[in-house]
Length: 499
Image 1 (cartoon, one colour):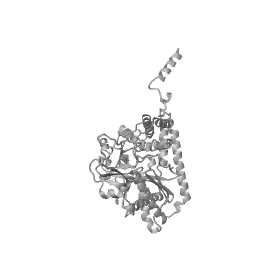
Image 2: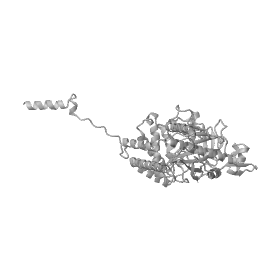
Image 3: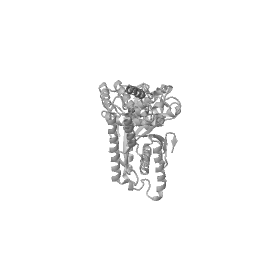
Image 4: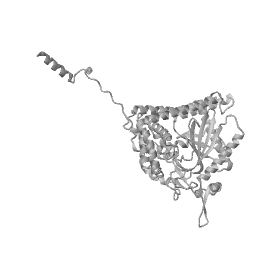
């Protein structure tokens, strides 16, 4: 009779809350998975981090000096363009953006742009907005002539300018005669681009007639629609500059005035004055507009300010997603990286800052951006962030939209594999750059800005300062001030800091 009693006590002990820990095993925590693809979120975060490491390359003193040399060359060239016929403003304010037009830093059509590849064609790329005209003397909303244009686009009458400006630019205008005998001159983006390309080509030809030591090599000058693409060789680096003639305004356009009345993610982080300090007209037209007359509104200056309020993890996800769609959707170019940039800004308005600030949420943000873009394609709707009533995908046919949506679906089904492919592409581009630098022996060359050791010290200080700016301001854009009669001094600003 004793045996059953002992057995009963043993069973009750096993079920007791005071049983020793060795009697039960802890349940391991299941990894977080992406429902659609089954990929581990932790693995996606790791891949995004690895991609960012390869994209955000560190620059040594030599590369920083090469960047400065190329910048000075471009500004000197533009100073010479101004002196050709005095069309450009004497004291001009440029906006220098990190990344080329093909990277979606501005909203321009990519259909007519030659395809350039990082590593094979260039090592670093920039977009430089060069005001052909400035309208900076107004402290009220700017009303543009949009009667003949689609939303986000406008014609520009030179009646807003003085007689001297009209006479200078008549040959870059289309003319409309009125019944009362008056003639209205409309600033033509295509004619301005014609003049700009011819002037740049003329200046570069003169420079190349008298080659000087330390002057960058002009490896390519090409007109892509209204963009002038210049590839410079400096030491072992190749810099791509997409130079775009624009019209610059201070203030804010009336068509975007209602946007200021809404709540936004940047409220309380930066001032409204910083956001609405100015805008541009880009030489790009709508799908139904007249190329010779229509300009596109650009808020690139505002976007530079808004980027300061976007979390690092969301920016990492955006850069990774951009690499995926550039590779996948580049042919045909119905979708631009600028569409993705707009979706990122909309997500910042839609989602709480505490959520977007999570450092280990980059994978969630990447998947969300892909989902958002696919939703836009299926519905053929992508509202402009600053002018929401403007649908940037309105021109897409149903067949084109569904074709791109299906392509994007393949990315969403296996994001890890596509990220690995993007990483390998970035590695290959870096290897090409290193090989070209090794062949050129740039590390053994003297500084391109000086010929004697006595001149080297200030250039080294400048190179170190530039390297510090690059590392302290990743992904930020630079606003540049230039005096064509003095290109020896630094003239650039990163956000609100001057150098």
